[in-house]
Image 1 (cartoon, chains in turn cyan, blue):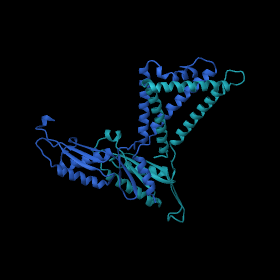
Image 2 (cartoon, one colour):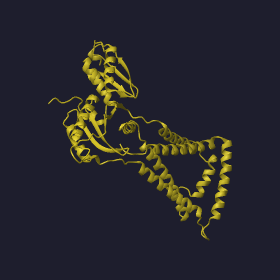
Image 3 (cartoon, one colour):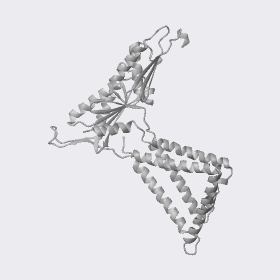
Image 4 (cartoon, helix red, strand yellow):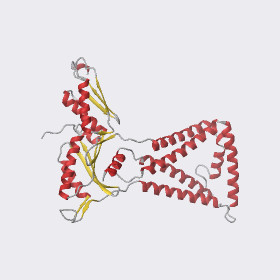
Amino acid sequence: MNDTNRALNRTILLLVGIVFVALGASAVIVTVWPPAAEYWTRAGDAAGAWVDQAVEATMIGTTTLSWLAIAALALIVLLVVVLIVTAVRIIGGGRSHTVFRSGAQENPLGRVIVEEGFVSDALTHSLEQRDEILFSNVTANDVRRQPVLHVSVTPRQNTSPRDVVEDVDQLVTNLATMTGGDVPTFISIHSGLRARLADDQRRLA
Amino acid sequence: MTTPAFHRIVRRETHSPRTVAMIIAVVILILALVYVGVEIVLDLLTQPALLAGPEAALAWIVGLPTAQPAGAVVAGGLALAVVGLVFVFLAVAPGRLPKHEMTWPDRAVVVDNGVIAAALAQRISDETGISRDHISVGVSHRRVDATVTPGPGGSLDAAGVHELVDAEIAAYQLVPPVATRVRILRPPESDLDR
């Protein structure tokens, strides 16, 4: 999970969608409906005259360049930059590297700092031992400024999700006992190509 | 303490972020803007335009009602409007992913519907002795559909399977809850019919 601003995602989609619908619909309407065509031509001619006049009035010295064209260009560059920056800022963020931190006073084990890598290795190694678990991945993310452990598990097909969660729950509880602090944990159980390709029965060995 | 955080995680994990659609929309916008910018620059440098210079483009837009071929204009307009409608739909639709939340003390748990379906099918197979290949289970947002085909000459009590599925589902404590539907297909007359 990340900090992608989903409301902004949808707002951008909505605005772009409305603009596209408006442009497309106008093109169709002015072509097939004479009154609209008449209105369009009149408005278009008026706008054209205004643009001609504006270009005339904003000529730079004796050149054929118009400030209007430069301004349009600047506006386009600005818009492109804003769009790129917004898109990049929306995506990502929220990763946390320290899962748990406690001072000597609050923890009987003393001062403890637990990093993501340690928890990740400990849990994935324990989960690898289990035959019904094909793949697991552990990350720490900041949710509302609080580290949350995300344990993602792909079990063998036909494994009861309840059993899987029970296993993971137990492992996380053991880890909490060892480090002296329980971290909020989110468990996701996945199906997918990996589960479909693997044998759906446990190997008896 | 962690309930609001869990609530947020579960909501985000069970709904599409729409990031891909957003990026597509933004890239289309950027490409259009860059194209317009290039045409303006070419015009300022008095170079030949790529397709049409700013003046010709404006004239074309004003003359759109009489532009030929009219069919192409209508088709293009419709295509643009349809793409726009798709974007609007993606912006407004909930974008629910095929996953369920599982109630669990002190942990947030999200399970793919496919995992639930496979586990239910396995459970039915274990309890009834019918081969796993003759059981299909589909899990959607609010319902579970189990279809069982008993072996040749065999028969099966739908109520029993229903009870079995309900018990298994109850153990998962899914949010939102699902309704169960069980269908028992007529068994084939002999093995050759399969």
